[in-house]
Image 1 (cartoon, rainbow, N blue to C red):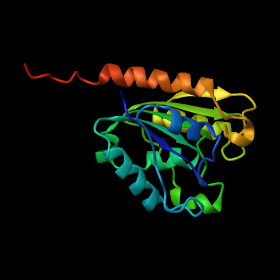
Image 2 (tube, rainbow, N blue to C red):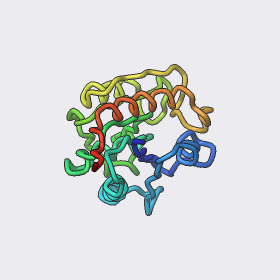
Image 3 (cartoon, one colour):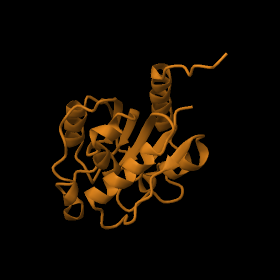
Image 4 (cartoon, one colour):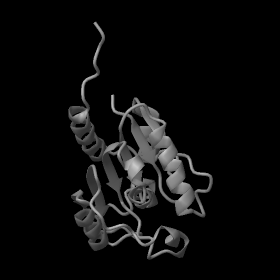
Length: 185
């Protein structure tokens, strides 16, 4: 089973949020913990995410939300080499909120792994055109939802079947890329 690393965004994902539900329900899921969810530091967040990914015994699929998406794009090459896929949901626009400014500028380079970016046309934290620009730059498949807000609990996203289906597609792709383990005779 591919390990799943869940990366919440600014202020964390509360109980009942789809990320919290997945962290509790999905086999092999591990949730990144940050020392400060309310005053995020790019250096600290990237370090926590990096430690979590590198602690896994095989390459991972990342599930990031909001500012977590942007933090993932700042990961160093030695960490991204351990990522097989990423579901990036409702990325934040750190240039629009002062408290998130440490994460700007957002990297506009192709990600070295498969990714799906999901955004909403009514997200108050990132205009859909900005999310679309991220998807193009990162080489992500772009899924645009209508009237889904920030794709969080406040917008009605507790259990999220579409998100699970998108994650499953990344897991299947990652499993097909993982070489079989040699068994000694």
